[in-house]
Image (cartoon, rainbow, N blue to C red; front, top):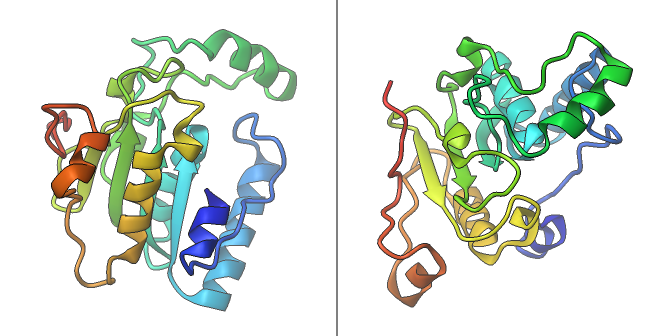
Length: 203
């Protein structure tokens, strides 16, 4: 994904925080420093977050909306309340408990499920296989959207439809954000009969 976006002319940067095993003071502080450096060098930035990375991206934007232009999440279960246990929850908790015994991966605070104050796109698939797709939906708001693609959770990082969405979103001028609407034959990359921004969570 980073290679593709680089070929399209974007200045792309990895998060450089090592293995993502859940929030810790070290990881959170590292992300804040990284975002601050990138903002100083380039101005407002776009953040693309995959899975748990999307939850981090949303909270960075919530804390610093002047620093973040937009957030794009892929298979990020920011709506989870614990009512849907993901297929990875048990293994993830076992790993995380070594690091922070009090961490609960399968619950997200209610305030974290509210819209963030920047353009927000959620890419999700109903055949995710790791998280339940309903956990990935933005609350309806003029600057939010939810877009369904075909595929799996682990395949989102090189899913052609997801890559097209991300490239399209990043190419939008800062003052002209509109919801994604593919036209012509490229529409067939997406599940048949699925509109765009359907399945949005009501506020």
